[in-house]
Length: 134
Image 1 (tube, rainbow, N blue to C red):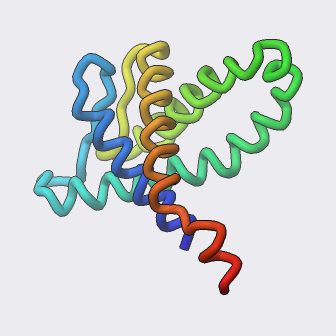
Image 2: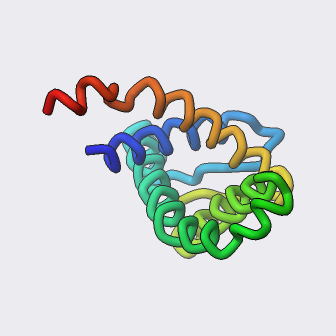
């Protein structure tokens, strides 16, 4: 259930970021591009981003532990931008998906996605008392 919530929150965060034209992050939905196709595209891109973040992100973050210490955690901005860029590379093989522009704008977009994920994750996550009752 947590993974489904994470995918939905990722899809929402990616949608918010694609509304900001200055960040050069575009979403190309399935044809013909109606709202159902846009929603399905967002959910699929959110799923791919969650999988990339879970699998590749975990490995990169473990390998980069010395860089986290050396930069006081600022390397996480670059790593999150890389993971968003990797999601765009994975989905560009099809006629739909995420497209990114300049790398540093992708880093800013990843930062916004992280902030939105943190806020919505904090709201939608079950409280500790609720988890202990189960």
